[in-house]
Length: 437
Ligand code: NDP
Ligand code: HSE
Image: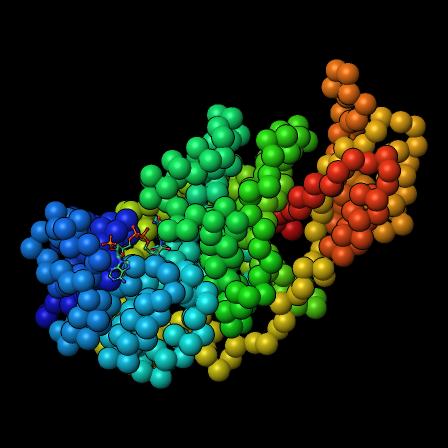
């Protein structure tokens, strides 16, 4: 059978990994896809830099040479960012080409527009590599779990921030040094604030929530908080109480809508997901029929991500002659069956909390704090008062609450911070049991 022709946009970490894997495993991939998958052209910005890797592969510095090339069947977008990626993807679709992308920023922001254009043109847009690197989580949610009503999912879906948290905990390494290492290893985004401020994880969570619940992409409604304000002190106190702190993306079906939130989270250390370290990712999915399922693997890096890109290429190759109406829908649900279930404002989210505050070591202080919590309808699960350090008159108090609503906690924190016996701000980290029941 005639080979399928692929054009690559980008030959960086993921583009380079994709070319390497396609070349190394060419024979096996052909046996699986039913025909040869042949890269015929690649676009980069710096021809000199790409020369050694490209070998005899024709290169161009104009990416439109790739998307407008009539010989190319599938365009693989691996340049990242919003523009010109969006324009190139829409142009490829307009030209009747299938698209594979690893660009979660693009999919989370413009996925609704891109999928509508692809639907109208009868072409596929595949994006497995956009979430959790090499883990086939899109395929699992969209196909493997299709019988289920998904109740919630929670994932470590940013390799860079998990790598930073792990190195800080295990080696006491400084934040900035570990971030530099993550950049050198090719894990971090072009703008690493996307990693450490939870934005990259929110892009991925937006995509997962759309597929899990059959809702449009709504990145602008996701609550996003990163790891930059976490202190080693909190990581240590959490451990003393039997918890690990992870940057989690959580999407949960609640009575009044869907919770969509990314933030540092205390997780009981006995949970498997609490032990996912380094740049590894893991996603826990709770379905009504299957119960809890856990997906684990490398969340970033050249070949793990290439594994997902090539899987999409094989899928598109197998299906490209199929009637478009009989293919798996982009977002798992038929496009005219998406639901308008609202995303809940963060104030309405229900979860448990770790609170750390610094107070004067005087009689009545604890009573004031517990009264404020009780008046806000917040019940305390555990409380620890640390010994004051030598010569100090203030102590750290750590409280764990039972599940409550976020707006009550906000109100209570404001009142506690106003007490003249409490110094500075209250540190608040959300806590999830992630129990399978
Ligand atoms: P890199 O920066 O390593 O590579 C980007 C590539 O795109 C380079 O070859 C660059 O060329 C090329 N490029 C950028 N802009 C243009 C342009 N306008 N025209 C032509 N070529 C261009 O990025 P990554 O490979 O790390 O990331 C690519 C995508 O994959 C991003 O969307 C990222 O979020 C996503 N991703 C990355 C993962 C990772 O582990 N790195 C994992 C999962 C997804 P040049 O070098 O000449 O400038
Ligand atoms: N910067 C991303 C991460 C790459 O660290 O997870 C993988 O999407």
